[in-house]
Image (cartoon, rainbow, N blue to C red; front, side, top):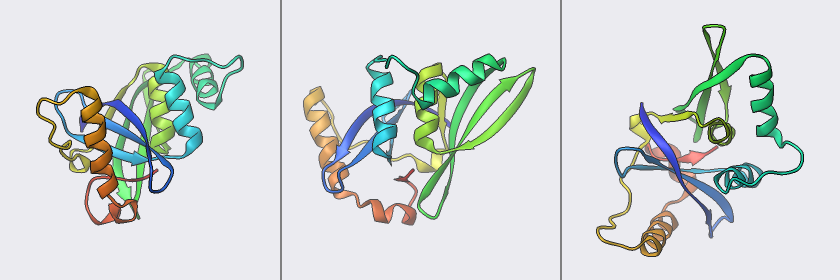
Length: 164
């Protein structure tokens, strides 16, 4: 497993679907994951450190885990079946580790709120588009063009991405 960070959140213009881009902490490889709009909003809000007056679902999940004396140890994205990624949330409670099956998008939103580590199976990673000495805007445009060439329907045919 490779430790990752949430690098970007973009919109796939062809499908009008949000895409969260994970990037490895110690390198340039990435993993694009197509996610739902509600989950994208939850991730974007946490990245921007915005809060609602009342807790959203992922805030509530964090509060419940904290209230029960647990803590999120890490989240992992480690399986791909039928074009769908599978994630696990690892909760540490009373010196016991509990593994909870979850969607990657929910796992990422929760990991951001708890500042937990994110890990992805090495087989899912792909090289970021060649960017050499590009500015941030040029990197973003290169990534958009790269993602435009990808077809979400093909993601089960090679390790690299899927809808979650």
